[in-house]
Amino acid sequence: MTENMSKEDMVKEAVEEAKAKAAEKAQTEQASGKTEENAESADNTDAQDAAEETAEAQESDDASGQKTEEAENKEDAKGEKKKFFGKKNKKDKKDEKIDELTDRLTRQMAEFDNFRKRTEKEKSQMYEIGAKDIIEKILPVVDNFERGLASMPEDEKSTPFAEGMEKIYKQLMTTLDSIGVKPIEAVGKEFDPDFHNAVMHVEDEELGENIIAEEFQKGYTYRDSVVRHSMVKVAN
Image (cartoon, rainbow, N blue to C red; front, side):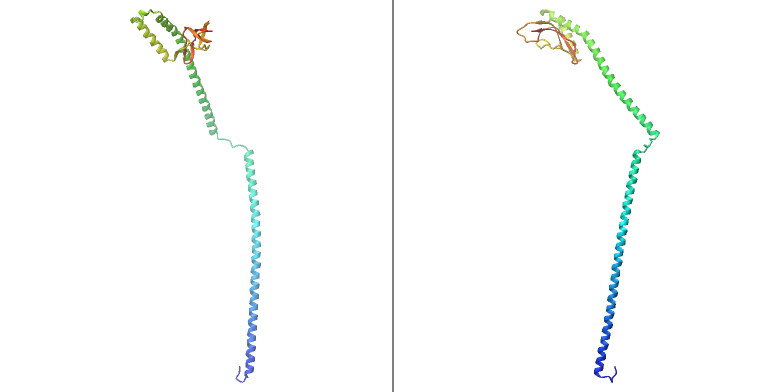
C-alpha cells in the first residue's frame, strides 16, 4: 500500500486480499478432504479385497484339509483291510519251538498229575482191601474170645487166668477201634439190610415191627464200609 492510496481503497484492497486467502484456504481444505476420502475409500477397498482373499484361502485350506483327512481315512481303511485279509506274520522258528515244547511240557505235567491221583486212589483201594481181608481173619478170634469169656463160670472170672484173658480181649478191641474197626449196633435197633443179615424172624408183641430181637454174630465196619454183617433175629 502506498501512502497516496485513500482509506477507502485500502479497505477495499484488504477485503479483496482476505477473500482471496479465504478462498485459497477453502480450496486447500476441500482438496485435502477429497484426498483423505479417496485414501479411506482405497483403504476400505484394499481391506475388503484382503478379507475376500483370506476367506478364499481359508476355504481352500479347509477343502484341502478335508480331502487330506478323507485320503488318510481311506488309506487307514485300506491298511486295516489289507491287514485283516492279508497273510499273518509268520512266527520265528525259535518261538514256534518254544510254543511246541511248552505245550508238550503242559501235557506231560497234566498226564503225570492224573497218573499220581490215579495211583494214590489205587493204593488207597488196595490198602483198604488188604486191611479188610486181615480184619475178616481176626474177627473169628474176637468171636472166640467173646464166647470163651461168656461161658466162663462166675467163680472163675476172678482167677488170674480169666483176668488175663479179659485184658487181652480189651486190648484187642482197643487196637481194632484205633484203626477204624467198629462193632455194628444191632439189638433193639431197626433192621437195616445194609448192616444186618436176618437169619430168623419171631413174633413178639413187646417189640415193634422190624426190630432186632437177638444178635447171633456181631458185625463190624471198617471206615464206614461193612466188613461183616450182623447175623440177627428180627421181630414181627
